[in-house]
Every structure is written in structure tokens, then in C-alpha cells.
Amino acid sequence: MKLLAAQTATTATNLGLSKATAVAVYASAISIITVIDSDGTEGGTDGTTVGSITVPAASVTVIHKDSDQFLKANVTNGTYTKIASSGT
Image (spheres, one colour):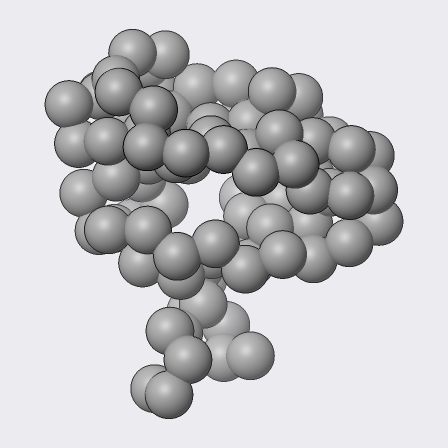
């Protein structure tokens, strides 16, 4: 896994994470991570839900998204890290 940025705390608002297309998500407790489409706004809670995933406690999951989409968590118990997409 190639890291491209420092970790950022998960939030209950939309984060674009510097236009990341691959993000490693660490959750210290069970979390629901939602991908929000480009009709949302950075730092907002609006936008169309593309999909959601439940991330198990004490795990790392890689989420792929479009560069203009956002991630939003239901709780603030984890971190996001922008990573290189597989193969790069």
C-alpha cells in the first residue's frame, strides 16, 4: 500500500480527501462509511448517496471512489489515508 497523504480523522461531513480515488479507512469501532456523489459539497452533509459499507472494528478497508466524490462516516472513530490505486 503506497501512502499519498497523512491520515485524516473520519467525520460526519463530506470529505473529498484531496480528490483521492483510493482511500484506506481504519475504524477503531464498527463504522458506516458512505460515498457521496459530486452533487454534495465539501464539509457539508448533502449529496446523493452512491453506496455505503460497514467497516468492522479494528480493521483497515480500502474504498475506491471517483475524484469528485466524497466520503462521510457515521461516527468519528477512525481515519482516512489517501493511497495509490492498485497497480500504481
